[in-house]
Image (tube, rainbow, N blue to C red):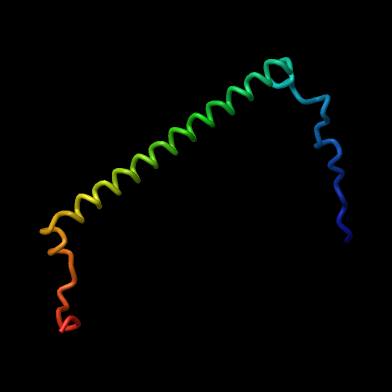
Length: 86
């Protein structure tokens, strides 16, 4: 008993049978403007993200500098192994 092969040629839709998409309906000028606007928005978001990271790093450095001048903080966080200094 041999298995019969199905032909799937009827299942595959052709390009002409597909419904029109928004990309097909819009002119190339409008598509280019939308792509450019999208790239500008992404660039602005990246700049904001970079600015936030830079600000957070500066705040962290300022806090560390403040702590380095605080004797109480240094004393609490120092190693108490005084044997190695004998």
